[in-house]
Image 1 (cartoon, rainbow over the protein chains, first blue to last red):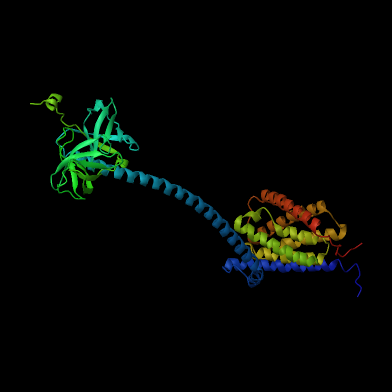
Image 2: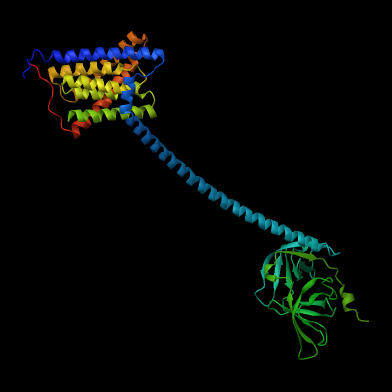
Length: 286
Length: 165
């Protein structure tokens, strides 16, 4: 049906007026319900219900995104924290190792100190600073010398037993000849039978006990101590253990002694300032 | 097609509303996505459609706002009617025309709200002039941006408006 142009403009205007009137009534109603405490009208609730999925979805997406973002941040923080902790663990492990080393060193030094107190002679402690056990001549260098009262022929020991003797001194260093040196000789005795002999280094990390008659009662496992008869080493310092005691081809036994000191692991040493026998007494012959 | 666009636009406006409420509370005091939607629809020149679009958009805004229910519906309907009426007469097209309509609609919308709040609640809106200025600028900027996007990606429909000579 054809509608004249005069009528058409009035219809939207009419609708506009009707809609505005209805909305005004709605507003008035809404303002009254708010005053009465009912904050939402039925119509308002209906509109909200229809469109509520949108804010819910937005909140869900926002919440999930926020969670993911915070999760990512937390993860980054955790990774950094983990790296920090790894660094700390590494630092603490190093520190722990150092402390363990210090504790071990302290125990060793205490052992040495206790051992040195057994002697009635004056003692000094020193640190091995150079070790030469590769050649035939076995020696170590220590960080104490004549200025510390160290003299040639002072005995050198550690908590395990005899190491050797001082053969050379400078002001602040001294050279020690080890008992495994092929030129070293120590007056020794077997602890069990008190049989005496002379320990000589074989230049290869062990020592031989010479001048022991073939009939002497010496068996592997016997402990060998210093005899205190050579004018250098005090009596009773452990030298080593007999590992081989065969009847020799001549009048003496072939005895191999394993030194009680591992020359490859010498760190701290005790220098025993032995009382030296004057030359004239040594050389005096009645 | 235009109603489908309107429905999608309404959902986007509501989404923006919810987002802004969640992350930037009070942001809607400076920006109104519903006005953009209504003006965009009313630019078609269909007065009937514009009135309905204004009412629906306003009711949705009211439902998720703390103001009187019907306040925004009233103001947006007024805006929609005016814009649609002008467009049915002048057939305005283009970004600047849209911007001018949008700026006018924001001002009208705020003025209507101001008057209604004064009449019905007997309250004064604090810093109304400053708020109006800021809201106009931000809504205009965002609206022009949206209009440009729509012009780029959507073919502008033929005017559905009832033409009167």
